[in-house]
Length: 72
Ligand SMILES: [Zn+2]
Image (cartoon, rainbow, N blue to C red):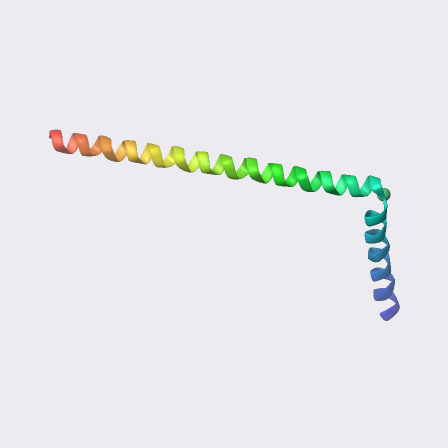
């Protein structure tokens, strides 16, 4: 049990060491991280735009109803 656990840790350690020492894997990791950041930023902008659109629609509906309410 202990041997298994230690071997598993050794395997992950060797993988981490490889990713840290191998320039190809390092570059891939960095590009993945940048891609994730860019995607998250696009998502945040899209969400803000969507919220603004919903708010504008709600305000338009509310003001429209107010107009009708005052006219009638
Ligand atoms: Zn590699």
